[in-house]
Image 1 (cartoon, helix red, strand yellow):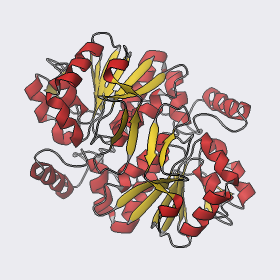
Image 2 (image 1 turned 180 degrees about the horizontal axis):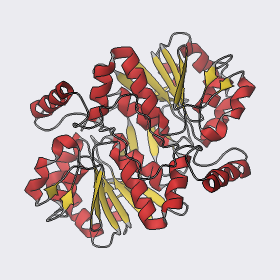
Image 3 (image 1 turned 90 degrees about the vertical axis):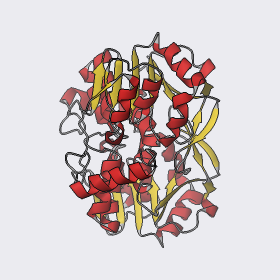
Image 4 (image 1 turned 60 degrees about the vertical axis):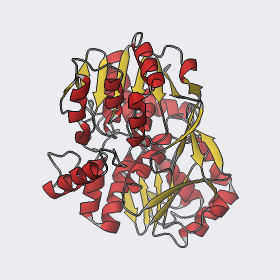
Length: 216
Length: 216
């Protein structure tokens, strides 16, 4: 199974690297990072560069395509080169997937029409504009489209995908290899669980940034 | 607070990117990626390049230093340039930290002498050679040294560190921003929880690779 992860300037690194670490750990699977042009892209804060080894037209026909989030992906919502490529690869993928606000890009490509989908909790409603039915959940599977919630949720999504494709034993071996036995020292990882004041603060910050918070 | 994450060829990307995503999300905090030479390093499987913006001698005096794991870090265990740099920055850090087999590098630098420390479950015993007391646990704090278990554990460790430094409200806001509400679809993330056959398989694979499994 070959996975292509689309990266771009202004991405959120963990959205891409969480699933990468899971998918690459499956024996025989291969992950490639692709971008509009081969070369380095930088994260939203500029602190980290990630290398895309292939341009879109060199990406072939990946069985899995994954679009991460990050404020930088808003530029892709009207980028016909990227949206056209997504439609093209989606025609032959086994799984078309996103993490966080990556679902907005799948939506803009027309790939969420009539589908249940999720994304970062601050950016669920905008999915309606693309004909999607936004729902909560750590990840949401609708046919071959699988969308994950914010940032860290891509790890859970990728493990699910591995289990579906090659069975629970392999997924469990990957989970053990990356010692994914999460023990968050706080319990504020979703708007249902976090203190209301913190939810309100992040919601206001997102609104103030015209839906482009640096952490989305 | 400024954090320097040491990267190198053959690292495990999630070891570095998990904590990066947490630490960078704290208002006013800054993360830099450093390496022996500035430029690109590649992950153990070669699939991803990460950019180090600074060489060690340009890293100044970070308040947090973090060493990730990955089979590639075995080359650092006898690299006096890296070990000397770690000793030097440790003299002024607030926190000296590692994820996964990064604790071996801290050990080789002499920074775990007489300390309780952890790391990837497959690589705890080798810590004894450095005078450390290897213990289990998601992360282990001993004085200003904080070591995390394998790969994904760096996220939990970094959230703890944020809470210690700037209080639980900020840590909770970061947790909510990265939607860290883990819901692993399997429960095999530690050797205590995974099926015995899977634990045995990974243990044998690690031994066969002379303690250099590609997923450590």
